[in-house]
Length: 124
Image (cartoon, one colour):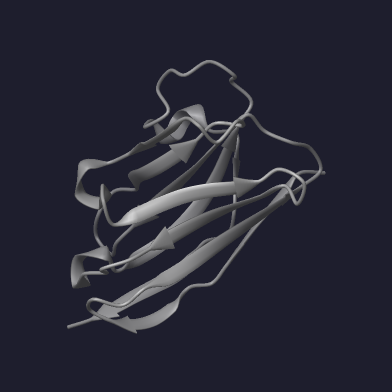
């Protein structure tokens, strides 16, 4: 049984940092992504990482501030968030996909498994 469990969310002041973790169990995945959803808004792609970790893509609004990494030995993906802004406030989800080609990685519907989400709140 596949499970994705996020942790690390919380309340932080603007300009601060948080690191989210996503521990996968049940199998390994080539591509794992992070998405977020703010109240009243659609789920938004944040970034994705390939198995070799040399491939990462980010949405423009987080480039230079967020970094995705992974530890394949632990089957865990991380989202390091620096220089946080109030507009980063959202429920953050980890997602994993069975597709092994780099296509539509920004599309939530291309992911097969999702975590329960972890709340990130950035105060101004």
